[in-house]
Length: 372
Figure 1: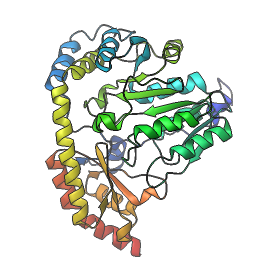
Figure 2: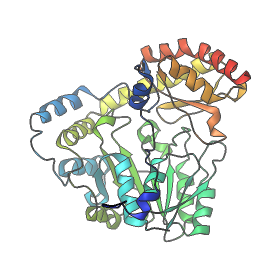
Figure 3: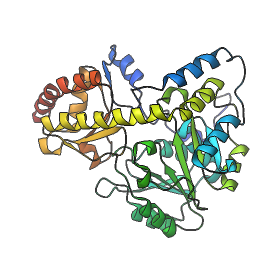
């Protein structure tokens, strides 16, 4: 073939994305979902103050956003009582993960993650030629001891751990994270993805001012603050590592409207508390719907609930497919044994009413398909 050629590494990569979005599924089926409960979005939405700030910023969208994210960084530093040089802002955790992998992983370098954990880390690691080493979950929790041991055995550059966890919703206590850091090799950086951190009690997480040379933490405005479509996240870590992001990050990646919206969202903590209250009630409702259909709800420190389908003797994927056929969008873990579960995001009563009405028939359809 003549003409420009992509790199040898790029040529080996599949043309895929970590997730098939609900929009792609709607295009494939030719119909819209009636209940969007699969992407762990905050369907309760951002605060009115956030929307007002974004509307006002839209009139100035002819401007580039501040490439230093100055106002948002300083607000985050004040909010978390941190030095500003310990914070970097980016286009959501996904982009920050890509930057971090680019900084630390050369072709052939080993990294470690859990089998079935959030796949975007794997996407970036593979894209830069990293060699991924997987560790199974233990009792539906990420196995911090297994991850640390694997990091030692392979000499990992990075270890990825989500806490609270996606896709299972489980939570490791702060003491476990500290012990994990003590067990990691000196050259290994722990990426602690706390995208769902606001949904967990603060005393169940490391204090934000906790500092360790082998730790970087990531937070987002996509979940509890209801701004998934705006793509704003941030990382907290040692100043030396945070400063290195400026070598490779997309300096204009966080647009003006998103910066203003995130700043307003951070200031509106009353709205955040209201969202957390609604989220807790919705989790209880999902657990109740599960119980009514003989599905066990796993404890969750996030904005979703995993319903264990193993008691039915029915493949969870078949139930998911049957729900999709009637316009209910949910997802599920994709690695055994966690793939025995359905993962359902919280949402308003109207969406959960549709789920509750559709689930019994979906189970019947799935049972018939399984028995064929």
